[in-house]
Structures are given as C-alpha cells and as structure tokens.
Image (cartoon, rainbow, N blue to C red; front, side, top):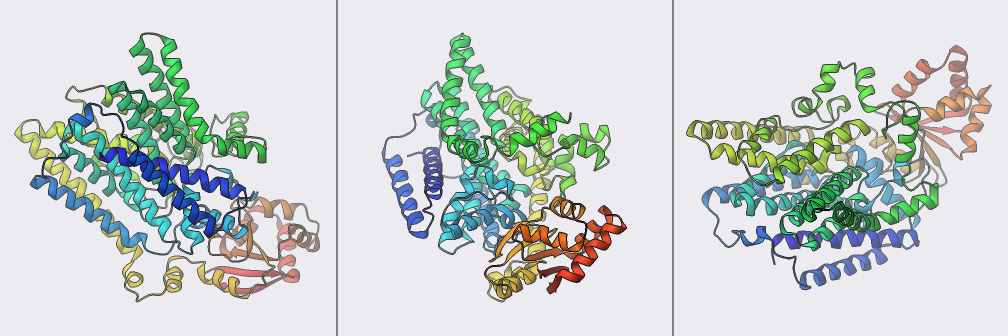
Length: 593
C-alpha cells in the first residue's frame, strides 16, 4: 500500500476519533476509560481502512520510483530529515510552557476532563472555536500525560511533510520530494511550532490533504479523490476557522475545474456542491453545538466580523480595528510598509513579537518562489500560486497577520520553492553554482535558528534529569511559582480571577476565570462603583474570592485609565478588602476578604 494512502487513512481515523471524543464530551462521558475505548475504536477503524482496498491509482502512482534504491544524495536528504525531526524531539519532551498551550490548547481539554464532559466556558471566547485537534489532546491528558500532545503536534508536521513528499515525488523525482520535506520540517516557523501542543500542524495537515486531493482529482478525473479532498477539508474546518479560507479557495477551484472539464457550469455546480456538502457535514457538529449554545453557528467569529463591519472597519474577525488599520495606527506603519507585507513576512519575522508576525520564515524562500515558473509544466503550479496569494490576501484582511495563521498555505509555498530549486539545477552551470550557494544559505539560516532556539530553551538539564519539572517550569514561566503556591495554599472552594497575568490557566488547580487582558471587567467594576465596598461586591457577585495579577501591568492600567478619585477608590479597595498572600517575579496572589 502506497504511503499517501496511509496518510489519508490515518487522517480520516484521527478525524473520526476527534468526532467520537466530541460526542463523548457532550454526553458527559469524558474519562480515561471511555477515551481509551474511543482510541481503540479509532485504531480498529484505521486498520479496516487499510485493509479495505486502496485509493485509485493516478498518474502519480504509476511514476512513483519508490522501488528504486536511494541514491547518495537521497540518503543524505533522508538523514537530514531524520536529524531535524530528532532535533525537535527534545524540545517537545519538555513540560508545556508556551503561551497558547497554557491558555487554550491544553487548558480547555483539562477543564473538560475535570468536569467529565464538554461544557460552556463563557469567559473563554475561544472555547467555542472548533477543537478537533484539541480534543485529541484530551486522550493523553486523561491518562496524566501532557507531553504526548506536543509529540502529536510534531507528528502532524511530519505527516504534512510526507504529504508534500508524496505529491512531488512522482512529478519531480524522489530527490526533490525529499528536499521539499526537508525544507518544510526545517523552516523555522514549522520547527518552532513542532515543539508545542498547538493545533496549527494538524490544521495544515488536513488542509494540505484537501489541496493535494483536489489537484489529484483534477489530474486523474477519479471522483473518489474529490471525496477524499472534501473529507479532509471537513476535518480541517473542524480544526481551525482559518481553514474556511482553504474551503472557499479549494471549492472555487473544484467549480472551475469541473466546469472546464464538462464544458458546462452545471457540472461545476454539481462538483462544488458535492465537495461542500461532504466538508460541511463533517464540520456540522461544531456549527450545531454553537447554534444551540449561542444562537450563532460561527460564534464568536461571526460576531466579531459583524461588529467590525458595522463600525466601518471591514469584515475582520479580530475585534473593532481591522488588521491593516492596526498596522497603520498601533504599529505606525506606512502605506509602503503595508504594501510590502508579503515580503516583510519573510524578512522581518520574529518569535513572540506580534508586530513582527510572531514567527520566522526563511527569506531565501522568496528567491526561489518565482523560479518555479521559468519552465513550463502542468497547471498545478499556477493553481498553487493562486491559492498561496489569495490565502495570504484573505488572511491579511480578516485576522491579525501572524505567520502561523498562514500555515495551510505554507505547504503550497514549499512545493513551489522546490520546483524553483529543480528548475535552477536544470539550468546552465553557473545557475547550478548559484543554486548550491542559495541552498547553503537557506539551510545555514534554518540551522542557526534551531541552534538559537536550543540556546533560548536550554532543554538538556531537564532532559538529562538534572532539573526537576518544577524547576524547569519556574525557569520558563515567571508566574509559575506564584501559581504553585496558590494551588497548594488556597482553599478548594476558591475562585481566582486572573488579572493582566497572561491567562495561562493550565497549571491552576483552583477554579479560575479571566479578568480579561484588556481590563474590561476592572474598568466596568471601578467605574460603576461609588466606593470600595461596592467594588468588592462586584467581585463577590461573580463568586471571585481571590485575584492573581501581574502587579506592574495592573498598576499601570489603573494609573492610565482612572482619574484621581477612582485611583483612590481602587487604593481603598486594596487597603480595606484585599490581602496579598504571596508574590514572586512580579506576580501576586491576593485574597478578597
């Protein structure tokens, strides 16, 4: 059985498992026992899929050179791929300590497991987002393992690289299939995400299956590829809302390709309808759930977009200010800088810096992208470029531009870049020398990033057992010591409001809620209180018994947002009704008395 068949069927089995966990969660049956049974059922489903025939063979299968022994260059590429993946593993074996792991992707499944089922978490707007990948993380969490979700996310990256390899190998040769996989897994953005329990690699995996599947359908005319693409698209939609861009673009391509093939618009409509209905059927559980809970199937995305549109800010899902307006006003960027955003993504990207796209790509990729088109080939290159450009444009207009939000389009970029490398190697001698030099710079850049990441994270003291889990987390998280103290000293009935503390809830063992990062609660509470006793009652009315705050940010917020009278009111509240229990690294635990 060919590798690509295994990848599709593994994706379908994992997607079916996420739907099964979704069903168990809403039935109130989230426990280690039920989740273990679900995992066994999914494994059996995967075996049945493998035994039940194979995907129809297209031109790509007939040209596959898998039976040919590896050449020296292919062996070197294979060793390099294994080396990069191996380099990611020690980082993935560290305890969860990255922002969105602790805020969302592990925190939400942990809350579900503590309750024994999926429930509404009103203070977490993102808990209403699709969670196909997050629910998979609930399985190892139920067995007390929070490292496995990180390894699962790394596995999704590897499988995405394999999908790229399977697509390119019959079209460009095995050496370029391996090169493309190496380019993908070693790209700084991809490598960095591979150490985290995020959802972006899962989202990219399913989106790439959908994209490659529809290209295979267009090439082979085998309708089952359309079905495979649609199923993959459904699971992608259930992983992250930004897959809706892939859905629109791939759906439009299905309509165009079928209309062109059949010579009638009705043929395009039929194919587009089949694709859409299958994808939306697999996405439907999330839509139905949100409609029942919130009266809106696309909550909270639709509400954010509608609010922004009504304010004249365009259709965006990031709040009242559109992403481009934010770059003008908040980041102070000029029109020329805005127009150069596609290039700046590659040139200026920086980790953990929102205005610098919160991630690093490789600038050499820009050099190779246009070179994919210096030689004629099939139409796939044109479609991939259109997909890449339109995905970027639609993402830039609807969400704050971060490199990881573009993950569904990165595989298309890597495919085109690899074809550019191939074209240059097939040119004259001086072009081959230029190609070797450019590739050397590209991989030195990637290697330097990986080495720098190791220097920042310093995983070996923990991996080698010279550092305890608590010691590592104290080193990695400024608020960990204060959280650990609160977990061990606060009464079991405590309810803690997190105020300007980053909302990292995963390590809390007491009930918590967000005071929101923008300070909306605090602003409303203070402005609607005439004295410190009324302010205390505002917190007590929510059941809040304790506060957990970043003291510097809290003090700055109070001084920046209130006049002298309200500042005095807050000071009286802390003097008369609040006791500081513990402080460490600028984070404090307060009791409201």
